Image 1 (cartoon, rainbow, N blue to C red):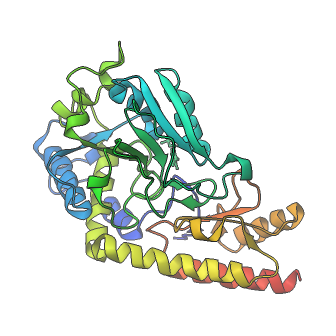
Image 2 (image 1 turned 135 degrees about the vertical axis):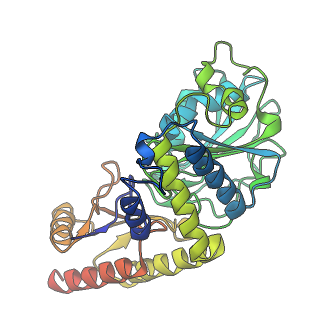
Image 3 (image 1 turned 180 degrees about the horizontal axis):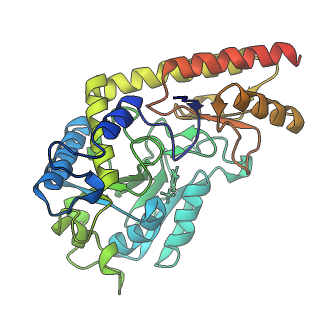
Amino acid sequence: MHRVYNFSAGPAVLPEEVLQEAADEMLDYRGTGMSVMEMSHRSAAFDEIIKTAEQDLRDLMKIPDNYKVLFLQGGASQQFAAIPMNLMKNGVADYIVTGQWAKKAYQEAQKYGTVNKIASSEDKTFSYIPDCSDLPIDDNADYVYICENNTIYGTKFQALPNTKGKTLVADVSSCFLSEPIDVTKYGVIYGGVQKNIGPAGVVIAIIREDLISETPPVENTPTMLAWKTQADAKSLYNTPPCYGIYICGKVFKWIQKMGGLEAMQKHNQEKAKILYDYLDESKLFQGTVRKEDRSLMNVPFVTGDKDLDAKFVKEATAAGFVNLKGHRTVGGMRASIYNAMPIEGVQKLVEFMKKFESENA
Ligand SMILES: *Cc1c(COP(=O)(O)O)cnc(C)c1O
């Protein structure tokens, strides 16, 4: 067997132990004589899988009882519509646009109401997080929206915006479970799991109960997109992405075993420091993001020479460091170093970068 160091932004690396365990259970899940893939979502075995997954996530994130945890489908992108549909009672929302994903969410919300762009970092290719301490929040805003970690550009909100009492909605797709957070500061926390938690096909939404209306305020919201439908059915209104939820559950157990979110944060800080310290001293490679806004998860960097970038990506791939090509809108390289990337992966990448630098000086 041959495994590479996978720096993909998503779908992304998963803990090897989790994959091994899933392989061991593939043909016969714990004496049921079948795979989780073959199992009814109404079976006792699956009921235990989804309930345990939810409880483990609640324990890890210390989610208060007045928040629902939903396992949904349609990707984070589907929630770009579901969020305004479920929350726009006044028909107004404020968006902070710090990257492509926030921009897509902002554009989608415009279909359902009045949407204000109250801050943006597009003027400098989204390479920083704007000052969000005193923004022109609309008195009628139903919520303030952020993308907390910008997967493509490699920035992260180090402090949450001052929403002046309005509900905060956050897309945490690429920083989910990377560090402890205070759930009570948010109305809605959601993300696709394929960046840091599990296989593509599952979205987790953590929603304060009072934000789940009996009937969504936007007329003709599809039944499947009404959070009420999913909350009442405990994520089992229709067939959920069973196998994906099962893998997420295993990743939750793995994080618990690693020491929980405090330990994850420490592990992620150590890994990111190795890479950023090198980028700061390198004469060949530079980080593309304002230092104080750097993400622990996605690290974009460039040489400033397109041909040299391409040569680096090619040689890195041949050496077993894969998916380092940057997003097409930024160019250069991007190393995504999610929870499951071991520290050795980052150490070896930096050794490889140093060697490349000395050979291409
Ligand atoms: C990947 C990503 C998305 C899109 O996720 P899909 O599940 O493909 O819809 C949205 N937001 C962020 C921050 C992402 O990283």
